[in-house]
Image 1 (cartoon, helix red, strand yellow):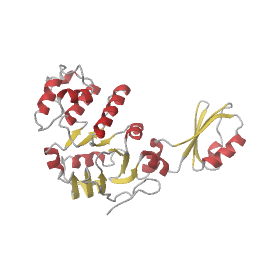
Image 2 (image 1 turned 90 degrees about the vertical axis):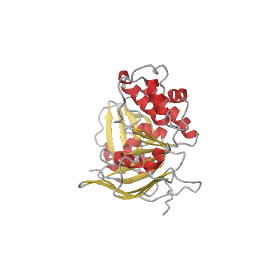
Image 3 (image 1 turned 135 degrees about the vertical axis):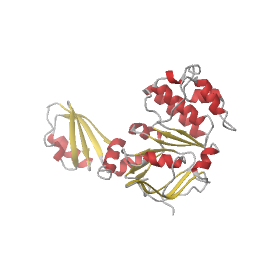
Length: 317
C-alpha cells in the first residue's frame, strides 16, 4: 500500500511509500518485536528512499534501538519483513551495503587509529581511500594515537570512520554526535552532506532535536514501538497547530496572560515572556491592549522540541 503526504506534508504512520525511481534503501513492513511481555516494536512499517537523511526520534523506550538492531541484522523480528536495498539485513551488511556507527561498539585497546582503520578497510572490496575516511571523520593528526587514549568525541569520530570506510550505500548512526563539541558536530554534519550528495542514504537517531531539525530531510517519530509522525521537520512542527509569541515586558508579572484568547501557556524568564498559542492572531490582539508595556514582540512557529513533546506526550506514558 502506498501513502502520500497530506497537505501539511505529514505522512500517515504505518503505511509504506514506494520509490518509483528504484529500490528503496529501507523497507520495513508490519514488523513486531517482543522481549518477553514487553512489546518493543509494534507492527512497524516505513520506507526510506535512497539519498535521504532521515532522523529517527522518540522518547526512551520508543523502540528506536530495537528497530536499528533489526535493520542491521543484529536481531530478527518476531513478525513482518525488512529489506535493505531489496536484500535481507544480514546479507546487505555482509556485502558492505550498510555501515553502522553504534554507541556501544568497543575498540581494541593499544591499537593505533591508523592501524585499526587500515585493518577494517582491508575487509572491503571497494573501500574509500584511508585519507578520505580520515578527512571525513575529522581524524587528521590522530592516526598514530592509541584508540584507548582518545577523548569521547574523538572515539565517536573514529567509529564514524570505521562505519563509512567501506563506502556503504546506507549509513546507520546511533546518537552519532554524542560527546562531540559544537564545532566538531558542525563539521560532522557538513561531511554528511557530502555523503548524501553522492546518492548515499543516512538514517540516524539522536536526542539533539535541534540537530535533527537542521540536518534531516525527514523525521520519523516513534512512541511505544509505533510511528506517530512522519514528515519534513517543517511539516511536523506545523502539524501541532501551535505558534509562539515572544515579547519583553517593562512591568514584572504575567498573571492572566495564559488566559488570553487563543493562548495555551505562558512562561517568563526575567522580563522575557513566551506565550504558546493555538490562535496567535487572537492572542496578540488582546495582548497589545492588555499589556501596553509589551515590546520587542515576535511571532514564530514552535521548535521541534515543542512538537516532539506535544506529539509524544501521553502516547509514551
